[in-house]
Length: 141
Image (cartoon, rainbow, N blue to C red; front, top):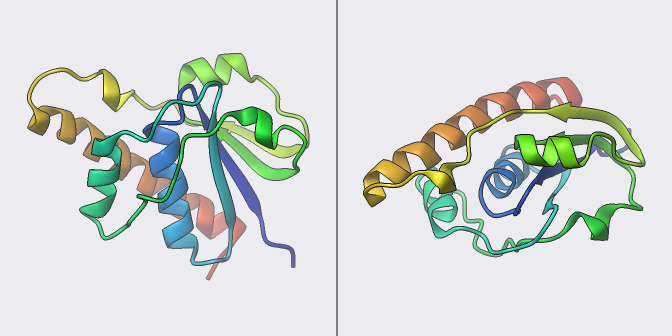
């Protein structure tokens, strides 16, 4: 059986899609090929890396990428994790399944670093739950 390929899309590829990529890569343990990209590339947010590190996932090697580099590639699942990317990419060429997980943008939270971290953790935990369900469907252990 061929390894399923998943692409997570977000606007800036800096937080939600990066967290999703790292979680699926870690929990998939080689059973899934995963990438993330944005409608525009920026940088991976340090708080996104921090909340992953808190659960033992090192995503420091991940970089922000634009979706153009993946546009001609085939994916089994293309999942948008922000409403703006969902609106910008209602369809994706060469995607077997297209899904949208509407998640709040943790980088928009203001306040103390702890308040910001709480939002990043909430997004991480929501993604972890959804990714667990996705993995059970597409690549059971």
